Image 1 (cartoon, rainbow, N blue to C red):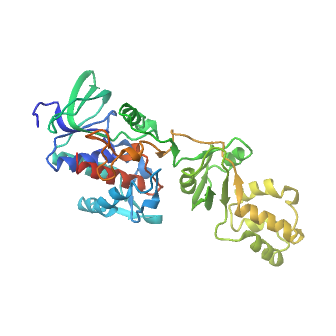
Image 2 (cartoon, rainbow, N blue to C red):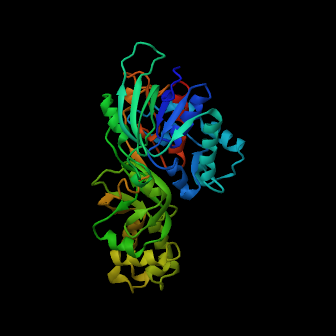
Image 3 (cartoon, one colour):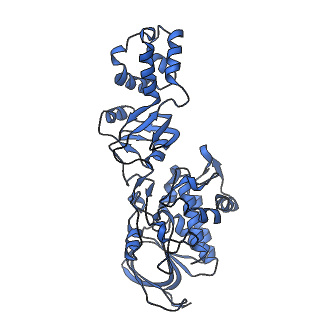
Length: 409
């Protein structure tokens, strides 16, 4: 290794989850590692995740929890560095965590503990980190020797211009989601520079907005949450949905957004544990003098029932249940079990937790994360066309892909 201060074995672009784990994995092997971060602080997305509690992984991780043009690509990395490997280091640092629904693991105290753990590992292994760096360009250097520098990285650091070189360059820049926390298309620009294919991208794990009659309903119900099953394009999720002043959010909505395309309708079952039509017909026999909205208010929040009444039985709002025909009750019950609505759009990258699509896995080794046709160039984390479901899966992909690259750079 050249001992010049600006020559490194490894330069990693991005001090997020994948970049930091990759950095100390490589440094433990004796590699001289520099991590470059454009923001003034590292790990901003880690700190805000999970409401500040960091949903850092999940007890149940399978390839089926990830979306990619190549659904098999993620398997090698997930097997090499599993959720149990990351849980082990969390426990080693004495970080208290808790399991929530669907095997999700969160810090009991603060996401700051996860970031502090990653930075401690980096410090112990000798990783250098530079923040407030703006990348100007990456230049591939012509070399025939394995030990020579392969890449030159030109950047500004504060008011200074720096020229760095390295044998291996790792792109861990994240993607387009939440630009206020550092999301950008920088990784795609580097991929384009080296003729690496990029798949179609769109905002993922993102709330929906509406421009039709649903919009004022959402505004009036803003803050109301309920368990529901949301279906779209042969996928469905049963978790909470949340009405907001912009539209509908909540875990089930964020999950289904990964499978939605503009123009698609959503089907929402507002009472997934109940065949509403059958229940209403039975209720007519027992509570015939009651109003329909009174009966439904035993199962659904009154403000929501009032909105549904305006939509579906406004003319019969004062009619006793006994005077509804079974056919009418079947129609209303089916609407509650299968409410079809059409979003006008998602909220976009501004609030999206992830970016669907990215650097094509066709051009990347699933074992090492190295570009197949460009030696010593690696892509890890969210910049790749691998997107996890909500529930700690995207962090697990960051840890797994970062570790895999860290073994080989």
